[in-house]
Length: 415
Image 1 (cartoon, rainbow, N blue to C red):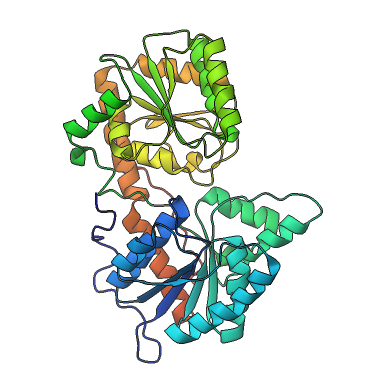
Image 2: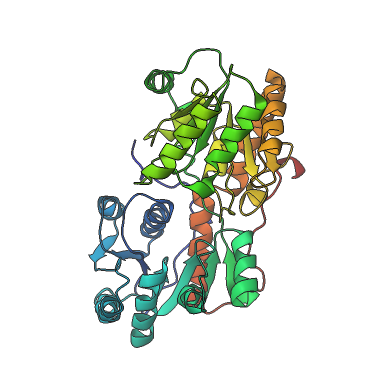
């Protein structure tokens, strides 16, 4: 499927980018590399939005499989060793980025990751370009204060985009970021991809055959890489407590080399007599079809998710969600209406939420599906994310500073 379909209703009708010295403004996004991931996908989406809105878009990274997508949407890619944390390389990258800024007449440098952000900040100061950041996570603070200092570069932009109100509060509390600098822009779901009507029966059947799912069994899915904080163990213990063997659970995600943890999960499944219930199925290249196969999606993260894209994607596909009651899901779930929130790490509470879902009637599930889709479409679309990000670029270029820029999620049934 084409990942770079045209973005409809990107911004307000008639939006014109502010000219800089009689030319369209140029935005440079900086990140370590262009490999598969949420930060990388968002970079491509913003690059596409910029070119379609009449800006010039440049992306600097160490390269990767997604470079082709950057160039396909009309942006320029500059390959630099921005994935390095070596201080000497980072220092040399200041000059390399400064040269790129001058060559492409960059007006705003938008940094999305810490190591390249230090180089980007130095280059912006050297050339006079504007500097802004997106704060994507809580980041490990470590000890002795060094990590706090290292992370703090993500707070040094003229504007700092937080991908959730949870992250905005973290920035205010931990780093003392002035509220007027922060712009909360939730991550966006590609609704041209995560749309139930666009998923054919053939795709769903093919996936069901590959995963050997029997007919008539409710399916529970936890998407996420196999790492301890994603909570796979919590879900497995919840299923053991539930004590039912007429359901199936899919743990969808790569172990990314964490073979020890994968073996721990396999041993736990065997020890709790759940080998017929729980299946580890590795990565999936067709997540829309995977959601359509699923009756309820679980996000059991024991550490707070900065946003939690899975929770939003699942609801866009009309699937109810059960998520941990902290972090981003507090903003992306309507509790008791589009899903449930349970205490982090509490397998008993998770088991009760799953049981509650299994007792719902078809009509109740239909009501949840409709509201969940409307909620995501009203608040967490790719189009909204892009439009709000471009508004921040315009704000910086025009020198305006509105007092209120952040957008709170709205309940579709309340408007």
